[in-house]
Length: 221
Length: 235
Image 1 (cartoon, rainbow over the protein chains, first blue to last red):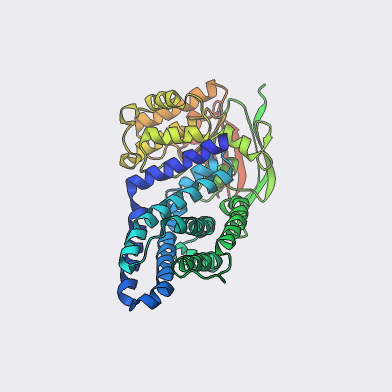
Image 2 (cartoon, rainbow over the protein chains, first blue to last red):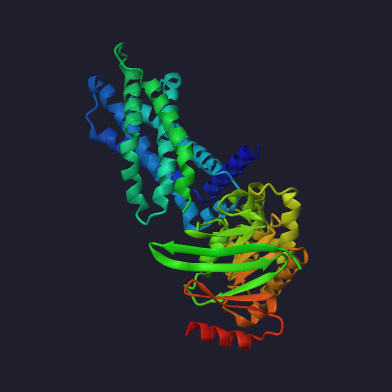
């Protein structure tokens, strides 16, 4: 019970700080919109190539916007020395990780909720709301799981903005491929498509377990 | 005779192979206050960070209230209140929100009442709904003291707690340390002010180059004598 209360307290604190500073959401949202608009103008979209291009554009926007936010969550703690304060508390390190992960997922989902209708309008594709939801959630969970763990590693270094993408991109490749292909399969259904959702689910479970276990060692000096 | 509350034996710490602490031995009884003196880089802050379970030693043992900090860090954290160089507060939250947040982290019962009482004590009750980002250095230090005392710790670790405090703040600090001792609490604080070290503490411990070079009870001791001992130790 204490564990969940501590997770809730850290999450509440992060949301409240973000609502007041607006540092993360605004930059993430603007970046996602910028990517969608630029790609919309950059590609010569036709009916026959739309299904091949649109999913990639959508996930490029999500991945890059996510990285902007992921870098901030733990870095903001480190900058003010507040991570020390959190580390001083008799709180399970898994609770800190879980709260940061949930906060990151929430920040990314808010950006996705805003970006998705704009994507649908710009690329003239249906939203597939029901079918797209599990893909977006599993993809977001995968990116946030890895991103939260590695943002803790990167935050301890001076070159965190450079280090975070270098560490995160190679690891999220499987989940991003799964998300892009699963989104593409919604536009052009194929009977030979591998079970992308299953792959993403397996990826999320494995990395969530590993990250929960490793976070304590990553965050301790 | 009171029982030792803090026992440090052969404590060593290195950063990037550079020795910071080279075998520290300190014993501090329950209800007592010790002032740590030493030049910049002597190892005072590192010692306090180890005691606060923020960093791990490479050798030696530390027992706080009978608990080993390496084996029972989570229980030790409940016993320790720490004020560091940074205020370690959230600028975007208000004063009361900060205290309530840390109250939840420490599972403090009746946290709101406890926070209100502490804010009254440190003179920030009227500003409890203002954001921490608007506070001055001295006010931040007062709030940091309130935050450190929130969960009624048995061992108070204060790293230069007088930094940024005005005369009224210094008096408040003295009062808080005295009250803490009256309630059986133990205090270890660092300072560069010899008068304050003698006035506030029962014992003085001087570090130089990561070693204890001088240890003395403050009874009958004067600041001038401590200063001479300090200069002698630095030679």
